[in-house]
Image 1 (cartoon, rainbow, N blue to C red):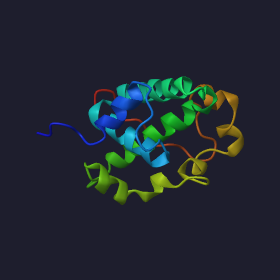
Image 2: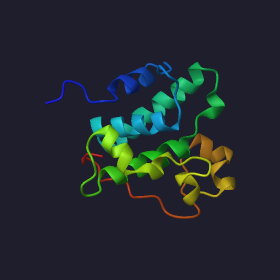
Image 3: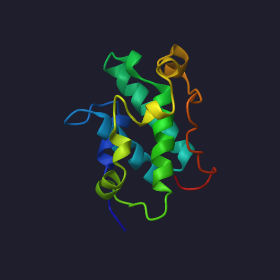
Length: 145
Protein backbone atom coordinates (compact mmCIF):
# COMPACT_ATOMS: atom_id res chain seq x y z
CA UNK A 1 0.00 0.00 0.00
CA UNK A 2 1.23 3.47 -0.85
CA UNK A 3 2.22 5.69 2.04
CA UNK A 4 1.22 8.78 0.05
CA UNK A 5 -0.75 9.14 -3.14
CA UNK A 6 1.05 11.41 -5.59
CA UNK A 7 -0.60 14.80 -5.52
CA UNK A 8 -1.63 14.80 -1.87
CA UNK A 9 0.91 17.51 -1.08
CA UNK A 10 -0.73 19.65 -3.76
CA UNK A 11 -4.29 19.18 -2.46
CA UNK A 12 -3.19 19.68 1.14
CA UNK A 13 -1.67 23.03 0.18
CA UNK A 14 -4.84 24.00 -1.68
CA UNK A 15 -7.07 22.95 1.20
CA UNK A 16 -4.97 25.20 3.46
CA UNK A 17 -5.46 28.04 0.94
CA UNK A 18 -1.76 28.13 0.11
CA UNK A 19 -0.35 28.57 -3.36
CA UNK A 20 1.53 25.44 -4.43
CA UNK A 21 5.23 25.79 -5.07
CA UNK A 22 5.66 26.55 -8.76
CA UNK A 23 2.27 28.20 -9.15
CA UNK A 24 -1.11 26.80 -10.06
CA UNK A 25 -1.71 26.50 -13.77
CA UNK A 26 -4.39 24.49 -15.59
CA UNK A 27 -2.33 21.28 -15.52
CA UNK A 28 -2.02 21.50 -11.73
CA UNK A 29 -5.79 22.11 -11.48
CA UNK A 30 -6.32 18.83 -13.36
CA UNK A 31 -3.78 17.03 -11.15
CA UNK A 32 -5.60 18.30 -8.06
CA UNK A 33 -8.94 17.08 -9.47
CA UNK A 34 -7.40 13.66 -10.18
CA UNK A 35 -6.02 13.48 -6.65
CA UNK A 36 -9.28 14.50 -4.93
CA UNK A 37 -11.13 11.94 -7.04
CA UNK A 38 -8.58 9.27 -6.14
CA UNK A 39 -8.93 9.99 -2.42
CA UNK A 40 -12.69 10.54 -2.11
CA UNK A 41 -16.09 9.61 -3.46
CA UNK A 42 -17.25 11.97 -6.19
CA UNK A 43 -19.44 14.44 -4.26
CA UNK A 44 -16.94 14.67 -1.40
CA UNK A 45 -14.13 15.28 -3.91
CA UNK A 46 -16.16 18.03 -5.60
CA UNK A 47 -17.02 19.68 -2.27
CA UNK A 48 -13.38 19.67 -1.22
CA UNK A 49 -12.26 21.06 -4.58
CA UNK A 50 -14.86 23.82 -4.51
CA UNK A 51 -14.00 24.86 -0.97
CA UNK A 52 -10.24 24.74 -1.58
CA UNK A 53 -10.24 26.61 -4.89
CA UNK A 54 -12.68 29.27 -3.72
CA UNK A 55 -10.72 29.65 -0.47
CA UNK A 56 -7.42 30.02 -2.31
CA UNK A 57 -8.87 32.63 -4.67
CA UNK A 58 -10.31 34.57 -1.75
CA UNK A 59 -7.07 34.42 0.24
CA UNK A 60 -5.15 35.73 -2.76
CA UNK A 61 -7.62 38.60 -3.24
CA UNK A 62 -8.84 37.06 -6.49
CA UNK A 63 -12.30 35.89 -5.47
CA UNK A 64 -13.62 36.92 -8.90
CA UNK A 65 -11.37 34.22 -10.46
CA UNK A 66 -13.17 31.28 -8.82
CA UNK A 67 -15.58 29.62 -11.26
CA UNK A 68 -18.08 27.08 -9.88
CA UNK A 69 -19.19 25.73 -13.25
CA UNK A 70 -15.68 25.14 -14.56
CA UNK A 71 -14.69 23.46 -11.29
CA UNK A 72 -17.53 20.93 -11.33
CA UNK A 73 -17.37 20.43 -15.10
CA UNK A 74 -13.70 19.45 -14.95
CA UNK A 75 -14.34 17.19 -11.97
CA UNK A 76 -16.94 15.40 -14.12
CA UNK A 77 -14.59 15.20 -17.10
CA UNK A 78 -11.67 13.87 -15.04
CA UNK A 79 -13.91 11.40 -13.22
CA UNK A 80 -15.30 10.05 -16.49
CA UNK A 81 -11.81 9.42 -17.82
CA UNK A 82 -10.75 7.75 -14.57
CA UNK A 83 -13.67 5.31 -14.99
CA UNK A 84 -12.72 4.31 -18.54
CA UNK A 85 -11.50 0.74 -19.02
CA UNK A 86 -7.74 0.55 -18.69
CA UNK A 87 -7.46 4.16 -17.48
CA UNK A 88 -4.11 4.56 -15.74
CA UNK A 89 -4.39 4.78 -11.95
CA UNK A 90 -1.22 6.85 -11.52
CA UNK A 91 -0.98 10.56 -12.31
CA UNK A 92 1.83 10.73 -14.88
CA UNK A 93 0.37 7.92 -16.98
CA UNK A 94 -3.17 9.31 -16.60
CA UNK A 95 -2.01 12.74 -17.77
CA UNK A 96 -0.27 11.18 -20.78
CA UNK A 97 -3.35 9.11 -21.66
CA UNK A 98 -5.78 12.06 -21.72
CA UNK A 99 -4.07 15.11 -23.24
CA UNK A 100 -7.45 16.66 -24.13
CA UNK A 101 -7.91 17.53 -20.44
CA UNK A 102 -5.04 20.02 -20.78
CA UNK A 103 -6.32 21.90 -23.81
CA UNK A 104 -7.02 25.50 -22.86
CA UNK A 105 -8.42 28.50 -24.67
CA UNK A 106 -10.04 27.02 -26.59
CA UNK A 107 -10.23 23.96 -24.47
CA UNK A 108 -12.30 20.96 -23.60
CA UNK A 109 -14.80 23.11 -21.69
CA UNK A 110 -15.58 25.01 -24.91
CA UNK A 111 -17.00 21.82 -26.40
CA UNK A 112 -19.72 21.90 -23.74
CA UNK A 113 -20.37 25.60 -23.05
CA UNK A 114 -20.87 28.65 -25.20
CA UNK A 115 -18.72 31.57 -24.12
CA UNK A 116 -21.84 33.52 -23.08
CA UNK A 117 -23.13 30.77 -20.79
CA UNK A 118 -19.69 29.92 -19.36
CA UNK A 119 -18.80 33.56 -18.66
CA UNK A 120 -22.11 34.46 -17.02
CA UNK A 121 -22.20 35.63 -13.41
CA UNK A 122 -24.52 32.72 -12.60
CA UNK A 123 -22.02 30.18 -13.98
CA UNK A 124 -19.23 31.71 -11.90
CA UNK A 125 -21.29 31.53 -8.70
CA UNK A 126 -22.99 28.15 -9.12
CA UNK A 127 -22.89 25.18 -11.46
CA UNK A 128 -24.95 25.56 -14.63
CA UNK A 129 -25.66 22.82 -17.15
CA UNK A 130 -23.90 23.05 -20.51
CA UNK A 131 -25.69 24.43 -23.55
CA UNK A 132 -23.63 22.83 -26.36
CA UNK A 133 -23.00 19.20 -25.38
CA UNK A 134 -23.80 17.25 -22.22
CA UNK A 135 -21.14 16.60 -19.64
CA UNK A 136 -20.47 13.04 -18.44
CA UNK A 137 -22.73 11.74 -15.71
CA UNK A 138 -21.50 11.82 -12.14
CA UNK A 139 -20.85 8.38 -10.66
CA UNK A 140 -23.47 6.98 -8.31
CA UNK A 141 -23.09 8.08 -4.69
CA UNK A 142 -20.95 5.70 -2.73
CA UNK A 143 -18.87 4.65 -5.72
CA UNK A 144 -15.28 5.69 -6.16
CA UNK A 145 -14.75 8.56 -8.58
